[in-house]
Length: 252
Length: 132
Image (cartoon, rainbow over all chains, first blue to last red; front, side, top):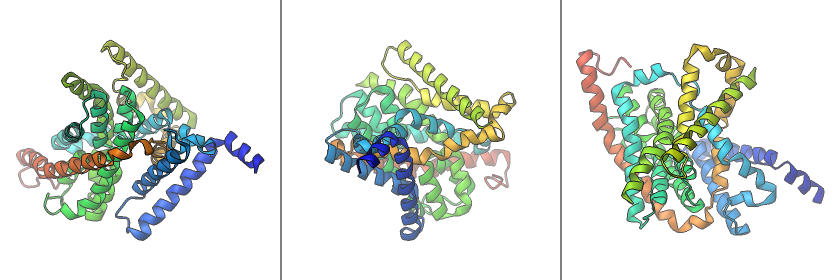
């Protein structure tokens, strides 16, 4: 047993790859079998990750979730800032300027409006809950933009671990709600043509949420929503730790 | 060569991070100002430019696509190392922020769709919206 543990600890990044792989496999199985694809597998996997992090925190008393367990230390490297930012940036690959043109003025406006509106709502909720520190408010507000803009912004401006976690959770709630709620409200918000699908993608973002939500509403609309949603994370990462943070900082 | 794409991606991110860090110093804070977003802009520019073809097409491109496909797994690993135990009292805040953001955004969809429709109607009277 000792030898096995030594090998696993020494190769902990490989343990992380294998474990995340299994987690995602289970999550997609559950998503397809039990939710009929209504909740995207990625959301279930991220939720499982948060649950595991809670368990890790309780058992070790540390602040880095399961990464504080020696064998699972590789999770810390795999999900750490460097590889995370690397993967985020790579998603911008293949984005064509011509697609943005196709999205039209309404699409572009909705991307910026989507980021700003979610940020303002998130900031308002944070203030309502008694947060007065500009860094905390900005990080939680960025989480309301997406679960990835939250931690990227939080780390860039030096937020605490707990607040960054809240931002991930807020983004995850948003993503799941978009997936499940979209088919229910589609009729009322006129979500039945490519134009409104692009506006929808720009406003809601969370690519997985938009894709799953539109797929359950009308599969033909998915590419239109996904087109604008891909720009959203980039715009969010760009604005979160700059203009939006400065505005919050000047008020608080 | 796959590594060309990976190298391009690395240069984009490093450059973006550097500019973000410099902006942070210039603006008098400890923050990295928009580094990741700036890096994404670089990658979009590179993948739209014919000059960088050798670094973005064929095998080189799959070096970038690999990391793009690892995005969700990496986000899962990121979730697994959050300080959830230390943030449990904030659950209500997280849920409220997420729900409120979705409700407000849903409500704005018809508003912004109208902007698109009216501008489309100006240019193409009959096919407004259906051309896309």
